[in-house]
Image (tube, rainbow, N blue to C red):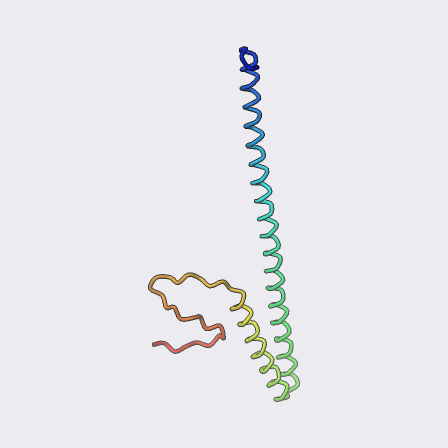
Length: 124
């Protein structure tokens, strides 16, 4: 069938076109994979923005509560804000711990877990 020079040339051209199409399919699949990764990254960035905005809203609310309690000169109101801050601080620390992947230990570093409560431990 492909014995004549023209037939062999046609076969070589067809083989080249098949190879080009196969490479295009590979590229299209890779582009789709990269597009999916970009979509995932965009969603993660949007979620981070939501988390950051929630923290800003929380801090703004605490600031206003403190100003209101101070203006009222009411010790019970001030204590209520302090109690709310302590509760929210622990909830935030728990959420950060729950959603932060564990890092691989660095050679020569302590393997003790990080203190997420904001307390400073005394130096040894």
